Image (cartoon, rainbow, N blue to C red; front, side, top):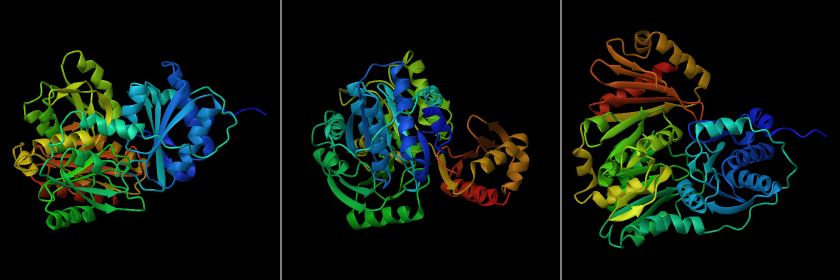
Length: 473
């Protein structure tokens, strides 16, 4: 019987790479598809690294254990042993696998609905690149027979290493006197955040734990979560509220008034506190980053952590410290840095804890005081769900050909255009310097819309109007 190639299985699976990892419907993640991705990844890594072990962890999605079991079985079928860490944040897996100099797979769909899932892949030196993704898709290896035997015992090494990464920077008084709420929902890190913040001196109030999966999107916070944050702040008199997306690499932080911070605001404040020299950010981040004139260099990229990471090596040759963040709040360290007189190692993947911790440490008069000192540029974003990618692409092509006509159809007939940026999607800079940015999601059939203005009401108006009219076009 002729063995099928893993590339054939992958290409016929319905699972595809997006902005961060391979994503698809749970029904598409059949055992042979999970095995194919695992074996293709192993083959690509073996071309550059020597290893005999692989690290795997999962999020709290109902489908994640079965997907992990198939990945583990496939790895063992080709002689690769597995370190299994159970449910932990994605950056915790990356910290430990990089320290062990072995590749890793995180089973997670991040913030997308529970009927979908995904795989994130890590080289021994950090996230895979777009070139690695292409190599995985065309890997020339036969899919062998494999037997799924369930999941091995969970190792606590990655959890312990991740907590130690931050405890080693400070003594136990950093957060003394602060009341920090943790919106736990179904976050992969919900069982370790309280321990970390308490060991740094905070009083922690655990909130909103859920037995079912909650798809928190840190770029499009639901109205219910906005109202819940304000209610919790009033009830518990919090100095801050901390949460993450499903796999714990995107933070969500609310100030002492229960107001959620935009991810790029959080990233800027973290970068200021760490005195970063050079920043890499996607084109969708707030333009006040450049207006601050506090960073020696700011590089703009397409949206997605692989594009941010790709710039780190170039800038590290010219600047002592390099970091990046995304509009979703995930923070990436491109170089080792000094924090509190101690070295924190580079972590070229999104992390939720570092920006939150730096913000908590710097907020003596309250987080809102730090935010109010920034230039008055406000961003807002949301998404239109169940919007086919093909429809999004068609809409953007029309806009690239005739942006004035697209603006009119989206409800902005009186707005002139200063510049059009097609780095990622269609980003229209209006004559008044406001911004309207449309792009298809790389992870799900959704149309993303970002806007920037001088006040939140205007930014929200752009987004709400554009998404409402996009359905009608």
